[in-house]
Amino acid sequence: MISTLVFSLLLVASDAAPRVADAPAQEAPKSKPKKICRTTGLTGSRIAKKQCKTQEQWDQAESASELSVKGKAGTTMPPQMDTGI
Image (cartoon, rainbow, N blue to C red; front, side, top):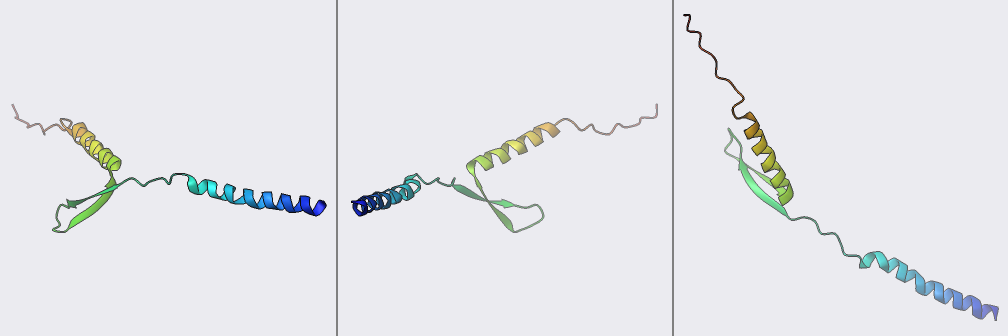
């Protein structure tokens, strides 16, 4: 009787173990964002540089460069000429 009980417990325990191990495998794998590669010309060089970024990173870089250009527009004063009058 005890051997039957032990045998049935082992059977149940061995059947439950693979279900726990299979649970993480059934989760959907996280997909990596698609990389977009662009070639950019460097000033003073004939060799182009290839840059690969996600669409989100390209958008952030573009908005940062636009803010940089807009922030600098109109902030510099031309030198004042001394007329000597």
